Amino acid sequence: MALDDFRRLGRLGRYLRKDRKRLFLILLILIPVALAGALQPLLVGQAISVLRGESVFPWLDDLSTALAVRYLLSILLVSVILRLCLQGVQTYNIQAVGQRLTARIRQDLFSHSMSLSLRFHDKMPVGKLLTRLTSDVDALAEVFGSGAVGVLADLVTLMVIAVTMVLIEWRLGFLLLATQIPVTLFVLWLQSRYRKSNYRVREELSQLNADFQENLQGLEVVQMFRREKLNSEQFGRTGSAYRKAVNGTIFYDSSISAFIEWVSLAAVSLVLALGGVMVTSGVMGLGTLTTFILYSQRLFEPLRQLAERFTQIQGGLTAVERIGELLEEPLEITDQVPLKQIEVKAKNSSISSKGEILFEDVSFAYRDDEQIIEDLTFHIEPGEHVALVGPTGSGKTTLIRLLCRLYEPQKGRILLDGKDIKEIPIRELRKHLGVVLQDTFLFSGNVADNLRLDSKIEDFRLKQICNDLGLSSLLKSLPNGLETELRERGGNLSSGERQLLSVARVAIRNPKVLVMDEATAFMDPSTEATLQKDLNTLLEKRTALVIAHRLATVEAADRILVMSKGKLMEQGTHRQLISNGGLYAQLAELQERGFSKK
Image (cartoon, rainbow, N blue to C red; front, side, top):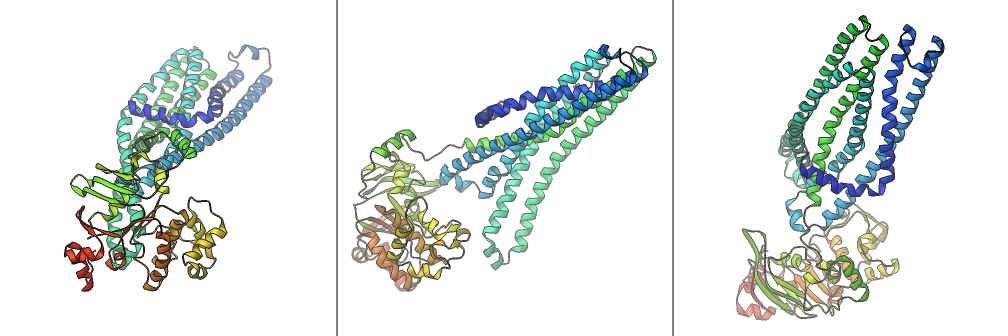
């Protein structure tokens, strides 16, 4: 293993601290299990020696043959039962610790993934991330349950058997131990090759999951444009790449298993040949030879298990590597103040938000060669209603993401009530920002849970807010009102109904700054007219930043900011911008003619 493997394994060790007692018990059981396993061949050999009248344990000399054999068989039975019981206790505790380990790691992976910036998630397909949270964590549990502890058990068994053999007959003992040298060298040679092959398997599996997840999410488009055959062929190529990668690991796995089997047969043959000569010459008894034949089989049994666990261990190390890469992914957007200090400040005081927003020379790019915002400066007074308009790609939605600290600008700063938003705790910042997006995301669960999200609000208050926002007709149309269960992403609601709910859940939080990105885009004129009255109430005494493509919806704004290619081209009221004859006037003219330039 490389140095990074030990470092990552050491980092995972902190997840096992709560299970120290179980781990101690598991390690403690290893010794009696190994001793019981090593005792059994010796007892069989002694039974044969008793029947042939050869030298046996001193305490058996004074007993009759029948009684001595009965004693040996009784001890053998006790050792078998004891070993099985101890192995049962050991296996249960190993699996219990393994499941606790994976549960803690998966929880940390999920929390870390949720804390990573959108920049990371833009580059990481969801399917690949899911593979790390599921398949890789399961592989880690497997390597702990039957790999790491199993290797220790096999090593302890090997040591006990080796010492016992040397004490009984040192010549045959050292001969058998010498046969393990080529096996060890061969395993070490395969380690690096298998590791690379297994990493490729994990990568191909991630791609397989990513393709599958993408096709399921875009199933409607796939069927409408008759892409089933083409996408199936593409998925088949991904599956073929995964199959080839798996075949590579199978080759190494089968090679080492076959090699160990060959070496074990050769060792037994060698023991029979040399042991037979020693028995006929009177140097060694038949019972001792039988003991060594059984030991030679027991000696290679841990090696066979090690070979089987070899694949699990390498797969687990690959999983550790991939999990470690995700856990080591730095958090781009964090609070500058330690969490404990933030909690203390939150208890003692909070931001007195008036809703003043200031962008100072802000520049941002998703990629180095793709500048989205460039040296942007504007100021929004508390309570002012400002509209953002401009062609698609001008950076309007990016401004919202920067204001909510979903991304960090490469240059400049953004201030809320005179304070840099980087200095404001993220939870506190987003508490004061109410965002209604064009594409509303609803979670599985009932309507009430999607409205509440993180707020603790009573049912009667929730119904009152819904009534005030004109959602009564919508709730009456649902089978169980607020308790109606929603399908994935709110699939049993229309786009307009989902947007109504998104406006409602923002209103519940009573934010000081309201940000709306085409919040009424999917509503019919009747629903939009009904909601517009309630929006006016919602916008009262609040700073509002509204993105709209339909210019008719922003005519009443206090000020309109017109953007193009990440720059602020002009600003003013609707009348002022129309009279100026600039970009806004051109957009308005196009829309009046019936064209839509978004």
